[in-house]
Image 1 (tube, rainbow, N blue to C red):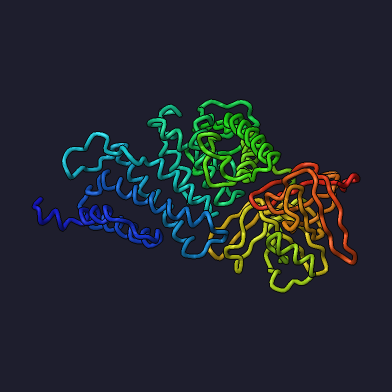
Image 2 (cartoon, rainbow, N blue to C red; image 1 turned 135 degrees about the horizontal axis):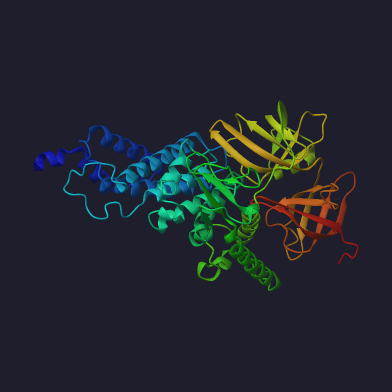
Length: 504
């Protein structure tokens, strides 16, 4: 090949472009990256897209992903159209480059045009790292995993290769990324906020290899999952569906990670209590990685709440106790604890009420869908009020999971926590007198709970005693004694209480 031909080669032009600084806007950079990859595939001579060039594409795609993550972290669902489409396209690009790199790794007969195949040609960004990053973006954007993802994940990590077995994965890197993907999948990422998803992936850097992955059945079965390696499907909990009698199966359990999670919960609880007793503000300094072994990204209270949920979900997969019945009817919805508080305080519905569609329901919850008007206002763990018509009382719910297939549509799973509420203001001991929080007082619901509860913003519950104010025909002020948290998410927390007969 002459020097002139080499300069004019489309692949060389792409390599030169990839060596330049990326665009400040990751969405713009992604559009150019996809175009350059397509140019290589169409215009390049056969086999010219070498592993080295693919590595450059992989590095650039991962850079775009890290910058897109920062936007997803601060976004509620459903995402703006441009951001939703960018995340979807980047997931497709990551999986495409991963598949191309894997073909080189397996020596799939691709010609090496620039001399003999170099030793260690696919060292650097590995295909399963790209698949893992694609899963991060999918979870953070609330989207379903793309068709074929799970089959690709099984194959990329070498687990589904004939005769390889689990030990056939090429190096610990594949084992790590596969375990991390499985650990996040069984932690129900649709019930986490984008910030929690990003933090969880970072957290698993240190603990994912503790999860058990085996060809043989894992005990105890209560925390185990089985995987059909030939299917495009995620892990299935043994307690939900028994292990099939035939097929190419693999078994997984996140339970070995629970011990470490429990140790960190106890450590963090002790540090938070010490800080409160010393009158020191509880902040991110508690989470110095060299001390706590925990990544940055969440406050100590948020980390504690998430670790508790991970402990429960990795210990025992949730099992649906009540069947859901298919229904289709419209309901009135009020989104957010603050909006619900003002709704109860003023009884005015102006600007706060929307019509959503119920898809199915059970005595304990609903699945609802909104097809317009909810952009950027919903995340897992927020409070939501729902009623069928104006004559019915409001049911207070917690958003358990969020799915968004498109920018115009969002689907929520709701857990009903009360059939009525009263707006109150609460202030905890140790806080400043002016720093009260808007909260909802919910009545007892025997046999689920024998005491009334307070539903408040996350981080409100800081001590055993608190004061609450309820306005109505007459003003009611009392001191309450908290009896412990019933529920805690990234957005709200709910605790039972009793009126303190020995008010201080």
